[in-house]
Image (cartoon, rainbow, N blue to C red; front, side, top):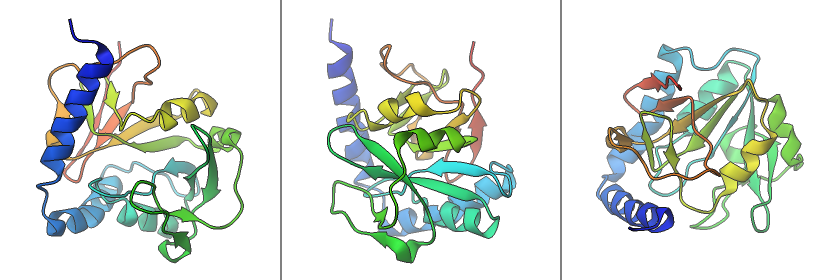
Length: 197
């Protein structure tokens, strides 16, 4: 039987190949669509603190969601990636304050880096996903940054995964004991809460 790691790797390869076919116009449109769904389902509350990833590459664009949060006076923590699995946080203060970190890393603010424990302030944590199943199992890129960072979350915080609509899987996603399940899936078309057993 194939190991969980090799099953995940094969699935990542398939998903990334499919993502490479997404037209640039659809990628750009996803920013506004994601913000619209966030507003429609009232996913973030004014004056709250959330954490959200800064999209890169073939990911659904979060730029519109981040802008919407600023307009609602929502404080947004965005990741600051260090060495290995180290992840700190900074407050997002606009797209113009982000610095490009190259093809394999998301853009980051250049101001103060907060420690990993800053994530405890967030009532909602929005993370990237390659796929999510109906039980909340999430397939990430495989680096383990989020699974490591989520150990510092407030236990009452909701974890929301963002992916393309076709990446919401009706079949179980391979997962292991280190993988943190999510509480909902946000796509450019809709938001689906996940009922955990």
